[in-house]
Length: 68
Image 1 (tube, rainbow, N blue to C red):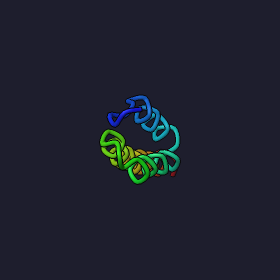
Image 2 (image 1 turned 45 degrees about the horizontal axis):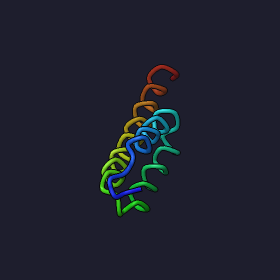
Image 3 (image 1 turned 90 degrees about the vertical axis):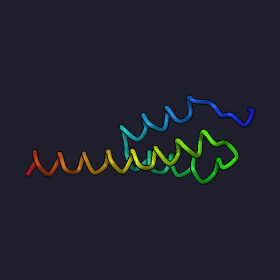
């Protein structure tokens, strides 16, 4: 695989972040910290980390509002 990366790997990360934010956070961290040679993975790794945190917070707030 050349240095450009494959777009399927970040898309899988976003899907995982929606389904399970904790696993998505770990997936994003793995992309960000372990794939330093591919700029695409670094960029999307950071975005997946942020997206996982946002999904976690939104789901937590929704649970608080509707199930209190």
